[in-house]
Length: 166
Ligand SMILES: [Zn+2]
Image (cartoon, rainbow, N blue to C red; front, side, top):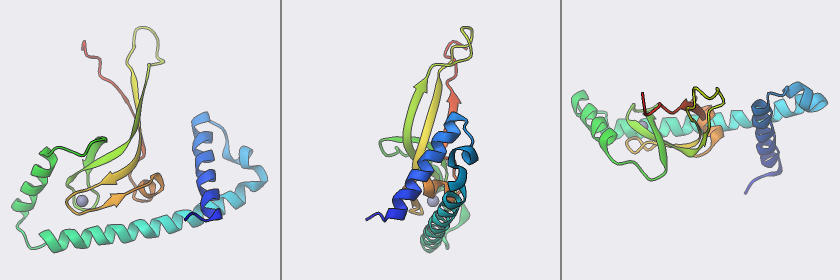
C-alpha cells in the first residue's frame, strides 16, 4: 500500500521529469515549495538507495555462493552462454550487470519519433524509457525508475536509427 507521502513523492518526481522535458526551471515552478519538495525527494531517494544497496548485497551474495569457487574461465563461459541466450519478451536492451558483469536485460517502452533535423537527414529517433532491469545469473532485479537511478543505471536513452541506405 502506498502512503500519502509516497504518492506525493511520485507526483513530485513526475512533475520534475516533465519540467526537465519542457526545459522549465524547477525553482521557478516550485517557487516557495522548492525546499519542501527537495526534502521530500531526498528522503525518498535515501530510502530507495538503501533498498537498492540491500538488493545489490543480496545479488552479490547469491553470485558468490553459486560461482565464488568456480574458476574464472567457467564463469566467463556461463556469462557468454547467458549473453547468447534468448531474452525475455519485452526486453529492450542488454547491459553488463552491475553486480556480476553478465549481459542482463533492460525493460521499458520505446517511442520512435521522426527526426527534426531537416529534410536531408531524415533519421528516426528512438527514445527508450527504461524502468526495470533483470539479471538471471545473480538474480538482481530493479523494478522502478527510482531504483534504476539509485543503482546508477540510466533510465532514458535516445538513439538515432542508422540509415539503412548507408
Ligand atoms: Zn548479475
